[in-house]
Length: 102
Length: 471
Image 1: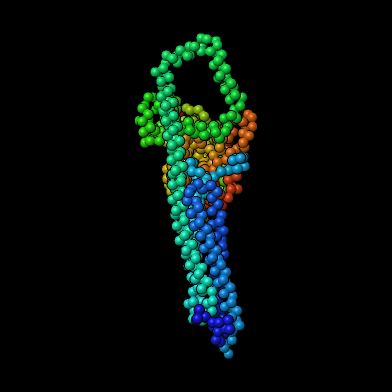
Image 2: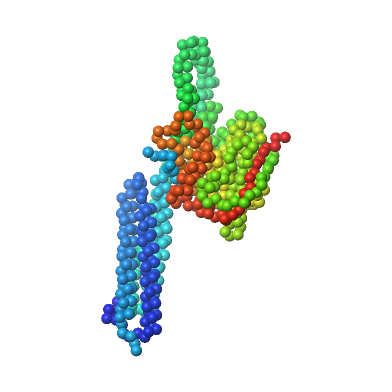
């Protein structure tokens, strides 16, 4: 984290560099957004598939625990992706607010 | 209430319960998620590298730690899903085999009962001939015994005559299936084969004597002319342009109607999306329920088909396919009703053609093993006796790729008075069921739907009629 700029903004960047970084941040945000949608859809599909109303097995409890673990991991991933989106937006704001090189 | 006239029940294989199917579905979903989650983890890494690998953007890589965290969670999720999926699949296979084992135990018991019943019949007619004759004499000579026999027997016969709908029930169909599956054991018991030897020879043992042998025996009993390979005279009707079937109901409606003198096979040719040709072959059911006539789709072909022999109906279909230009390895989808489904299944199982889909309606073809690559759907009405005449279908994991769609035509109040046992077998009722299948969201029907959508938009349809030449 030490290599990252603070909210006060980076040292001055020329216009071309700023535009390139903006472009990269947009690209990163698009990737995060698409990934978040795919993970959410996968989570929903898993929920739909796991309706096993009458599975007769003594291992059912263990299976449910591990399945819950899987759901939680996907939840944590979605939370992390939402945070990544916010951080990406923050980076963009910092970049736009930073000093420009004359 | 398990079944109403608007419900269908989709299952894989004949003896695997829907619960086991659910396990297989979930195992598949977990396997898919395992692959997806691994791919998503790579996507998270790529998103992280967008800023990390650029000297200018690296100072703005605020999202990198969260992306690293999400990537790690996804990798863990992938490993967990893969492990759970594999364990579940193993459990499902064991469960399915357990169900098959229970089914086998049921088969063993019915086989044993069959052997004992056959032995009893033999003893009754041979060993106990004198007592049997004495009882018969008693009944015929003494009016009071005649009256007793009439009192006991007449109501049963009268009830069936007055209420044929008594035979239109899933329970009766299950009984017939069990009886057919045990027919070999009854016969061996009746001929005096020792139970252990009968067991070894029967379907449940080495399978030397089974349903096929019994069908062969019936052919022999029917006389030497019951099944004779005869030359066929093929007649091709005019060819017309046609659009591809968009739904299963559409395809079902194209199966030729059974009847003496009518065409039995319809073949449609389409240019597929890759520029090659693909074909749809529709095969009618039995048109003559006797033997020795000019119809190739007769009862002899039914028995010969169940006996595992090439039949005149199959010969007629193959000759029609040859005439339509279908060659070894060509892409073909089959749709057949009753005996037509039996013919279709035998041709698909031969592996001569690249069969894309096989849909049978009320066909006694459950014992024929079809390659897993074929989208195979067997539609059966719970009250239709004809599929039960094929005996116990292939079960366990071997039968998994055979999707069985079952529909109960009547609710718990049973069929209306006067319903004939044949009503549940009519293609018109199966066409209704095909519409219900089109409306089903069950993913197990997807391969069949994909095969249907693989035809080109427009094609040509030709009808064929075959007649035995007994000259």
